[in-house]
Each structure stands twice: as C-alpha cells, then as structure tokens.
Image (cartoon, rainbow, N blue to C red; front, side, top):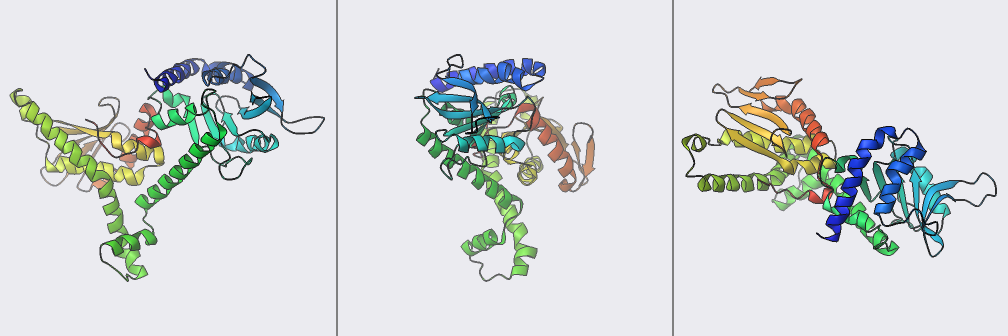
Length: 375
C-alpha cells in the first residue's frame, strides 16, 4: 500500500466516524472536538503540542477584544496555517471573508482552511501574496468520502498540506494550477451548453466556413456546433463501449441461447448516446458533468437499462423500444412511464433522476473527467 493509499484509508475512516457522530455536534466546540481535530491529526499535526497547534490565536494587533482564529499551525514559532471552524452544517461560502481577514492579518500564514467539520476548504494566496484567494483550490468533502473513494487529484492536493510535505511555494504552485483548471472546466461546460459566437466562428473557420453573418451564427450554426461538441465528447465513450460489448459477446459465444439472443439494437445505442449527450447539456455543475463518464447500460431481452455507476442503486431508466414510432421510458417515481416519439420529453426526468443518483452514490473528482467508459 502506497503512502497515498494509507492517507486515503485514514481520511475515509475519519469520514465514516464523522458521519456517525455528526448529529451530536450541536455547537462549534463539539464540532471542533469530534470532527475537526481528527483531520488536523490526520494531516500530521499534533494538536496536543502547543508548539505545533495553538487554539484561539490572536489575528490582529488590538490590545482589547482581539479577533482570534480558531487554530493555527506553527513552524519555527510563527503561524503558517490558519484554520477557521464553523458549526456542523454551516454554509462555508458565506464565511470565507472572516478567514480572508485573518489570512491577511497574520503575515506569515501561507495557507487557510475553512471547515464545518464535514467540508474542508483549502485556500492559498496564488493571485496576490498574503491575500487569500477568493475560491478554494481544493475541497475535502467527508460526506462524499463515505459514498465513493476520495478522488486521486483531491487526495494528492490535500496531501501537500500534511506536515511531511507542506512547502508553501509548492502548495501555491499546485493551487494555482488547480484554480486555472477549474476555471477552464467551467468555461468549457458553458461552451458545451451554449457555444459562444467566438467558438462558433473559430470552429466554422477550421472547417472552411468564413465570413458568416451574426444572425446566421445565432439562428443556424450555434445548434450545429453544440451538437458537434456533444458528439465529440460522447462518441469516444460509445465506440469504446460498443467494442467492449462486442468483445464480450465473442468471449461468451459458448454460453446458452438466452444470452446469445440479447442483441443491442441501433435504436438502443441511440438512446444511450442521447442520454449522455443531453446530460452534458443538463448537468448542473462540474461534478455532474464529470459523472457522465460513469453512465453505462445493460441490455436484457425486452428492455434496455441505463444506469449510473451501479446497476441497481444507480438505475436511471428502462427503455422499451416501440414498434409504432412511440417508445417507452420507465423512470423511478414520481415520473414513472413516459411514452413518446420525441426523446426531448424525458429531459426533466433524466435531469432529476441523474442528479439524485450522483448525490446518492457520489461523483468523481475533476481529475477523473476523461471521457472513457468502464465496462
């Protein structure tokens, strides 16, 4: 087992314990004691040693009524990490300003952690020295860690903060790269949903279409570029999956007649392809977008099942091909059966059920976004 594997195991064990005791954390002090200190310890900092971790550290220069940060991690007598704690369940985004003020007041601090015991946001000062960035470069979500393995990129980023590896310059460099990557993903997701005129013109120019009028871009070409974008994202997944299915059928040639009668039709594959394409458009955030690569299918005699990650728990819908141009989609309650000749009619059910499955099972981290399908 590698050091990162051991680190993941430690964090996962703490996550599972935190889930069991979270309901007892009715105030900030109990949240600190039961949920936050174990993570500080897992990062390698001895919170029983006042030369390593100090609580209620003064974060301004007033003599009376000083502002105090909940914990600081010390190095050579100076604070290098500031940790601001909130009660379990508190929205962290609304409290970033407080940590930002402490970060600036403590000139030697190079890393800030904001936490409510289950979510830990890590901040650096990539853009302006000694001014905390406005967004975290990584977030450790312990609730998600109880449902799915901690993403490799999240694990690596958090490991840089451990006592054994913490070097401010290295963390700042890694944080800067992650923030840029995060913003790029956001831009690309926006372009998938609604391609900008700039992207449309660039794409059209690359295929030899030039000097297109603004009105034509909006009325004619935006939809074409969006569809091509979705195709480019999903087709590699579909082709790989079809090849794997074909190989599986060849390998199972000696199985019984019932198995050999299951043949995935072009219409069923078109449904799978549509689901993936539409989810790329309907995804509410980058975590849902990343999760699309774990959407799979299972074919049976008489029905075709589309699911997320786990066949039973992750079931999205059953598809039953019709003979008169109308197909049947069966979604979990409250949607039930949808009989239609237009797949756009399933969008609302598809978006809602997929979001529920990702929330229940967990989504991959951003680094797990390459569009490859696993069998």
